[in-house]
Amino acid sequence: MSERDSEANRFSARAARYARVGANVGGVAARIAGTRLLGLEGRNLSNAEALAKALGGLKGPIMKVAQLVATIPDVVPPEYAAELQKLQSQAPPMGPAFVKRRMMAELGPQWRTRFAEFDLKPAAAASLGQVHRATTHDGVPVACKLQYPDMESAVEADIAQLDVLFALHRRMDPVIDTTEIAKEIGARVREELDYVREAKHIALYRAMLAETSDVRVPALEAGLSTRRLLTMHWLEGDRILDHKQDGQESRDRISTAMFRAWWRPFSHHGVIHGDPHLGNYTVFSEEGAPQGINLLDYGCIRIFPPSFVGGVVDLYRGLLENDQARVIHAYETWGFKGLTKELVDTLNIWARFIYGPLLEDRTRRIAEDVSPAEYGRKQAFQVHQALKKRGPVTVPREFVFMDRAAIGLGGVFLHLDAALNFHRLFEQEIENFSTEHVAKVQAKALDRAGLAAAH
Image (cartoon, rainbow, N blue to C red; front, side, top):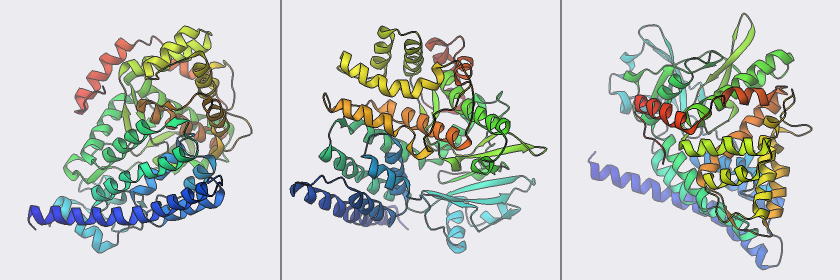
């Protein structure tokens, strides 16, 4: 097929996707707009259910986008978030014949000879691709993450509809300017399509967590990887939720590993894992006892400027020491504009919720009497109500995945009913902290992994 024909096919696929997504989402948007014109609220459960149903029929990356939106507090109303979170990002798996064609496209006609064994039945299927178990000729078990065909067209079509979702919220209660949030989600989802970049993320995490024994990062099989195929060593483990009934000590050990897996790369290198989905982790055990976690997916990684990391530490210390000047400086470092005393007080509602467990030097739960799905919703509502008096507020794009990942991490602690001294764990991670040190070690790690620094 010529390059021109190939491009025409991609354009046709994108156009078809635009039509399908636009019809489904646009129909719900029109329905909500209609209720507004009739003087009704426009944000009721039946509309939320209609939107979820419209998106649920599409599968693919729009599901990932919808779930991202649902997990960022207060971007959409609570009833919409609850419905969107019910969506499963499972796409129908590719059949054996289709898998063979896709593998041939990535590794050539003799692709099967590159493996000692290859299971054509997927071990897992998600929104952008599926995973197959295989074995190398050296006897190494591997996971082959194979991207679905024409995902670039699907992602571009779906991202184009992201503004429609955000417009629903702006139309109903415009206290948060979602412009930067849309940009950030679009950038991260596009990056998830590039498995060459994800391979670099794996190299980065192997370096950052090399001395963290309770967090395992898979090794990459570079010769069996392409831009749309990622082959890495298979890490044996159990689902996190399989350990909900373990004893407190085991659950706390898993939770401590989760804390380190997230905070250590951020506090030392300015890097976070932005997709805290439970399916991205498994638990490894020795002699029947859980020892730590396997970190499996590296598509949604966010690299921050060292100054942003400094802002996170400044806000923590400002809240801990009741230093209002330091708190304001932290918000300014993050990119919040037009700060007034009232706006700072409003932002502090959210900050004290996120930082609350880190500020108390005692063993405690991350939160009491709240489900993982509802974690953060009450505080987001309080912030929303306060912002009504002085919005709209533009949320800096760097804040989006930081916020989302922190909520996701808290959800894991709730699932495991962990009881930890979060304050001491955090203090260990920021001991001798300085932005100069972060800048130095970040630059070195990114250079080794072949990644560019954030600006």
